[in-house]
Length: 320
Image (cartoon, rainbow, N blue to C red):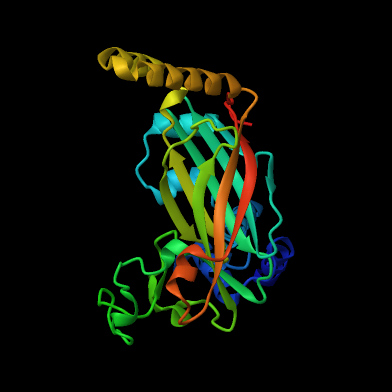
């Protein structure tokens, strides 16, 4: 098979191949002078191997699949194999959910994993703008991450990160850690400052039934190169384990005046555990505000519109 025939056959499978990529593959296939006579004939096995390599490159170029598996293994780096497998066993992808009407953003629960063995609940949330032609979305937590913003009394034209500033700075980082972070005045750091900037804040998950389901989470947030904002909430609801009942019982015995309170917490935990199989209804709450230069800080931090996504947390065995 000639070089041109090989290139034509590969392009039919994977799309147009840059000349430098084609030359690199041929160079790898024929590294030495002693192989020079073979450059114009390549075995079918090598063709197949090259096709697989190109398909793998194409898959990588198509983008990273951001999910809990990626978050555990790539984002966090160090993983307890047993904890990771337990999370995967109980993971539910795209659980049933309903977002309240929202004209600005799409917010979805991509994955949920409730692990009773470790008493952890992971919620993977993804948000994007509905009108990407006119709006750009960032996390509200990416604003002034260095804590140096001090309002009107600060430097109106700071040159370095960390100075007391009278203007807001935005931080944008690559979730893979491969590209340099960008931090600076908001309009300079935006992908396209001709668009209107929306900031989204994930305010937590609650249960409309009044069950104290989750408590306070640890939170990770990042923005994908495609402009989507991702939040990962990790809760540690102690009531998942019956050990919680024993702790509350011991607490009530040690402090008799708190026994009624402890008994109530035990009853609440038992009722919540009974509901896990059918699902405990939960509500993700968020806030979206449009950022403008010089806007009032009270509006920035508390204004805008609120939204919610209803979903259920249920205990599963072996994933979906």
